[in-house]
Length: 145
Ligand SMILES: [Zn+2]
Image (tube, rainbow, N blue to C red):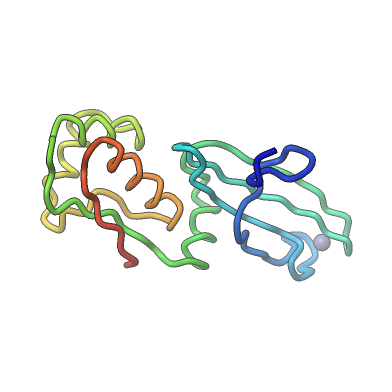
């Protein structure tokens, strides 16, 4: 069995953020996490409160809802992916288009920005995008904003 999964076969997220219960405010009852797993970006939100009994689970693939991204950025900072030189514009555009669900014009525009910043987001999101670009032969630079 892969160590990335727990005994029930659930994917283990490294270092989820612990937040207070959205209903009663009990500390640590809400957990939020994000992970770059085998080329796919995944997120989860899980509430398990012993004080008021609130239970909820949500997860998904791709960029998470903005509320969750804000929490992750608040905790781990905002990160950016910079492409100061592009080896193959065609393949870089293809990666950006498919990863960020952009049309070609928007993806090309990202490569043309003055700061060469193609993405701003959470740490896991930036790692995920940088890895996809690396797999396509590019040399993206990942920095904390
Ligand atoms: Zn509660």
